[in-house]
Amino acid sequence: MPQTVDEFRAEARAWLDANARRLDSDAESFEWGVGELPVEFFPERTDDEERAHMAAIAAWEQKKAEAGYHAPTWPTELGGLGVSNQYALAYAELEAEYETPGRHELFSVTTGMVAPTIQSDGMDDQRERFVQRFLRCEEWCCQLFSEPGAGSDLASLACKAVADGDEWLINGQKVWTSGAAFAQWGFLIARTDPAVPKHRGLTAFLVPMDTDGVEVVPIRQMTGGSSFSEVFFTDARVADAVRIGEVGKGWGVALTMLGHERGNSSRRGARKRPGGSSVEALATAKAFDATGDPV
Image (cartoon, rainbow, N blue to C red):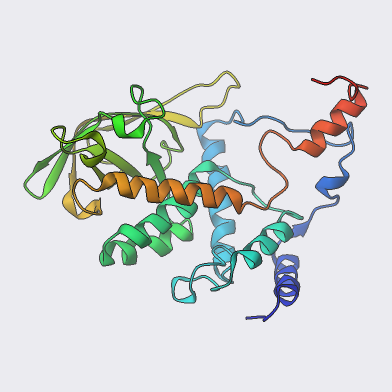
């Protein structure tokens, strides 16, 4: 590997030039009224369009994985480059200058939250089975945390998992789940012991989304998009082998994942984001002579 960030940046630039098309203009030089200005945060797509969009993102991540750019800070034995976050940010800034398929929340969850959580809290066979496949977006995993009655208090969740031999029987509901209709897996936090204080009665599972008794119902938003879903569990059986961490220690696993979510958000270097950017907002305000309005 290059020893300096500048050497790394030069090498990454050469790779990007060989594998992607550089954008014609920089996001920082946006001119209002020239070209398109897509500002929707949840685009309206058909299922086929959404699946094609995600397939393109996955293919790009797998192309990057051939050179380790999909996970620069991960160790080389797991397919990464073993470099610091400074190098990862340098790559992200470079990639923003090229035409790529963009982002999708399902992949942010899979690569930035689920993969590192399994690496830290999973069993050896789970790490071997899932981590690299998730990092490369070869399989996709949604986050089954939020519930209609729990609000922002995750520890108040009511979805239950009851032990039945070497399996668990799951009943309950999750909501606002990004990409649930397309994910092969769901990272679930469920209540396994209602008799103890709420933080101590939770357990984490990696649930196959095609399990009998799992139903995904898309939520149609006012923008027209339906990237979120409700997920219902009705006597859904999962093996104890997909439990992540110890029984009753799911709160700690959830905090680990949420910590990765915060870290992953801070490392996103791309300037083209859903909903538009502050540069585009300022250009729009200038175009309508509204910069004197404090609002």
